[in-house]
Length: 146
Image (cartoon, rainbow, N blue to C red; front, side, top):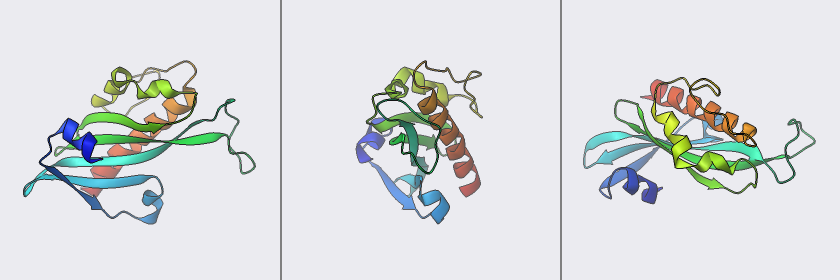
């Protein structure tokens, strides 16, 4: 994460992990970002779900047709999104969500909705919906936590 932060801010930014409840900790890591003693913003690393090779089935307890991916969202001290990056995406389906141009859509007004203010991507429906829902959750976490 330090490398991602230095690209967004600079190498003088220090992250401090914030403890979250167990239900949030399953899918999210939350950080405060400081330059010296001054709060610069917040960041969250979250887990999303994408399709495995061979496509997706409807999720149920008998199938494991989804793969995890991880993404990072940076917020300024006013809780506005400044950057979204996909950190790890291993599936062959839906990788288009890692495109920086497509991710810039999240640096606008919220809430986000596929087909309204977030473009759909053919062949990446599950991943697009997962990251969109997840970023809406991140916005709520930051708004309610700080």
